Image (cartoon, rainbow, N blue to C red; front, side):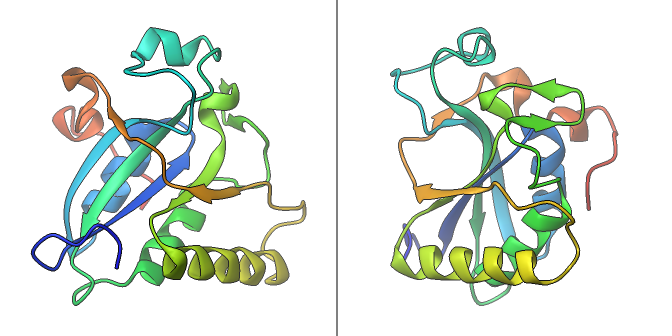
Length: 162
């Protein structure tokens, strides 16, 4: 299964600015840790300013480590859909650019199948009036964001999407 370490698995999601979704996932029982960073791009070791330029192809993302005996990948997908608007290409609220795209980065074939089924269910649910534009792609190297981005909103007592 996906990146097993002592029974833990990883899931990686991009849904606009990584600060809010990190807090949302971090509050879920069974999620043991979260980290924000950059993935899905072409440059090695990208930094925040470089990613914000839109030239690296990376998305701001959150890497979630979770205990599948306590929370399912499907539950994480449900939270992902709740945390953002998956119908706006390369945009979430005031944040615009490919780095803010909606994407699910799967770590194995089971996650891929679950992500595709979840996307189809969301599209058919009638919840969204526009087509879902979320990418579903293999997980690539996850580059940790700078320390000041980690648990950014939590450190400031701000709310999240969940």
